[in-house]
Amino acid sequence: MPYMIPWFDQDWRRNVVFWRRNLVFWAGAIVVGISASLFAKASEYANHAFHLLLAESIFLPFIITPLGFVLVAYLTTRYFTGSQGSGIPQTIAALSVPSSSSRHMLLSVRIVAGKIFLTLLGLLSGASMGREGPTVQIGAAIMHSLRGFAHFPRHDLEKGLILAGGAAGVAAAFNTPLAGIVFAIEEMSRSFEHRTSGTILISVVLAGMTAQAMLGNYTYFGHTSAYINLGWQWSAVAVCGIIGGLLGGLFSRTLLLCNKNLPGRLQMFREIHPIQFVALCGMVLALLGIASGSTVYGTGYFEATQLLEGKDSLPESFGILKMAATFVSYLSGIPGGLFAPSLATGAGLGANLAHLMPFIPAGAVVVLGMVAYFSGVVQAPITAFVIVMEMTENHDIVLPLMATSFIAFTVSRLVCPQPLYQTLAQGFLQGIEIIEPVKNTNPDIGSQTLKNKIG
Image (cartoon, rainbow, N blue to C red; front, side):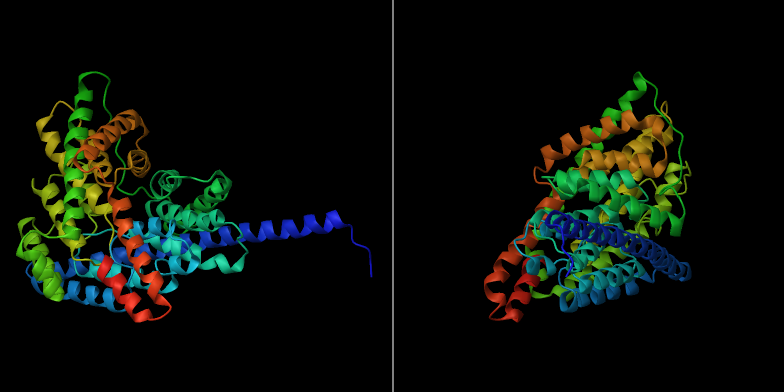
């Protein structure tokens, strides 16, 4: 038997383990990019299919939307527990749970399948929701499911898989690689581990490159060259920051309060008749659709692009009605994200403010409205201005965007001291803490407890 040099043997084994882990990250990032691209295309088709139905009759949502909401809510509760809502709170919660088995309750192949199918079904029903939040959970779940292909002895490296998956999901969904990196640091991990930072960067780049290869190097809401001169035009920064932060904070605070307890008899109605409550949410959305001229359904991509390009075909009330439609859709408990609807709402609010400030380019005010309201809702100011900057390809307005985002963040924290996603994540964590002691003795009790706790 040939003699093996001990130090060479150890280095060889260490290198094999090192490269195996990296290959898992890289292969997972490519899969995330492919999945995000296919999900984006399917979302466009679902949104388009609903608008084809609208073309037949604007009153069809009074039938389609309540029935669709009920079907999605039933499937979510019955077969895909853990897939409801945005998906970002589940990803944040998965970073804090103590064991892999607990994380599997929030990030699994079953949840990936459910998240994709139910989000598409929600868009087909006219829900005011986005695909970006779900893509974060999908990306994190895909990466988490690959942990068995490599040995991860440290807890932080397994967390790195989830961080990389979520960040890659943002990069692929928005076609904004830098925003994916910032989002992983600012929102999903308050204690970013430098030992996994290089792997996350590479994962984001690979996911972004894969998405661009499949979808092209597109801009999310088109392109605007509007900018703000130094001087009195900067008043728009303060106005948009304060109003956007105030409304975004009110939206988050109201959503958090109503997610726990609705006022008066409405809460009792939701507890006793959950199916009827979901149908009621669908009916309210249909009413909002009539009031808005059928503009509040779906993601809001088309409407936001119109506002950014200066087209005046939308009603003045679009921003407020879109905010209400998003609130009702999320309150129903069906899967769907807040990113795209929040950006569309901000564009509507910016268009309203542009009429009050005719001495400032309207496109610039719309962009500032987008970043202000979005920052107010998610309370992640760096992510907000980076996303808006990248997806509009407007680098001439970086400083105003940055200032507006931080003003909105400050105002929002005064209105809603608890960050939206972090607070919602606590609900999932509490549900898992309740399930852990009983899941080994009676899995059905644990599953039902999670449904009641976070459903």
